[in-house]
Length: 419
Ligand code: EPZ
Image 1 (cartoon, rainbow, N blue to C red):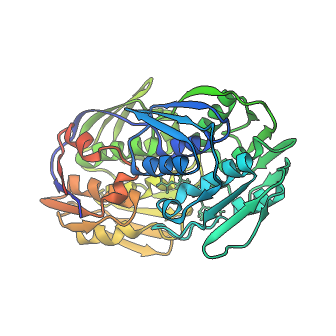
Image 2 (image 1 turned 135 degrees about the vertical axis):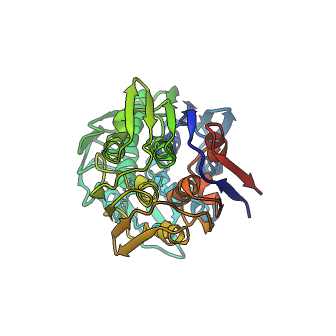
């Protein structure tokens, strides 16, 4: 089983180019099913989740070519509405194919997404919304969901929770629906805006992404050939900002959109990091030792992103003082804490609340990544710890970080992968 070996103590110095956003490319790849044509997607990150999504596209009949960071999807011959179990369970976000396949094929059979490492991942909001658009969705049978829709019709949909995936599924399904669809209490993440920009390039009549009401008028004639470039990954960027903060380093991140990172930047500044923003670069200098922050509450965008919670917990574990973190989005997203305790952290968990008493030093240990962002947090802790840290379970990390060890080593981290 491959692992990452990290020797702590180096102050990172240099510059890192941030890759395209995982959580933008996945829905955009699903959306390429809509136009029965050629879709050239640029600035694609090289990730396991992207490979899994490409496998699903090929399974339903698309032809896909990958050239460096460009993925070309020809969706002319989509001829299947079934997503086989082994592909669907490979990653949670395969549920994003629900809306696109339902719109394009009029039916879809997808394996019910199992829970994942960060807690139950229900799709009740997706199903309730698609039913309101006329989809007939049978209850789960043998682990599969079967949806059919003779003709989807536009609807006025209020999401009980601003679910990113549910918002994306409705946006994709409504491209083919008759009439107007409103999504109220829509997710406002930057990845939703990127999906809207892709759909507009496709010729879909959609507006409002980034606000809590998105309007789509279905039935437009879609372009047969388009090109789109994916936005930078704000969570990968945030992770490298924390890498500079936790090592007292000095990094310049390139190809980032700082507006997508404001809650992370403000908390890092509050903890003592000096951060300057110039166009699409961010320069950060970490303090000798971070200061604790009173409280961080993860929230839907534009609140503090839940996908940065684990990385901040690792960072605050070595801060001066006591910090509180409340994970309001997912039910059990603290699996990294038990591993940080093995490195000498002083963290108490109470349900969704973590009380972090900063310690002067963590010590290297053998730790196991249990999920994507928790795994990244353990690497960050290893960068600051005394001695050697071995991180196993790094297949989780490879789902969302392109060459994490190469990028960190390029700025002075002592880190290597052992197969
Ligand atoms: C997306 O997941 C992201 N994944 C997640 O990133 C991210 O953490 C999450 O949004 C929140 O920002 C992708 O975009 C591929 P949700 P998604 O639907 O769409 C509950 C990462 O590390 N919920 O907004 O699955 C759900 O259980 C990943 O890159 C329902 O109850 O998130 C959760 O508690 C992890 N019913 C909350 O809403 C539903 O039908 C937010 O989920 C749907 C969701």
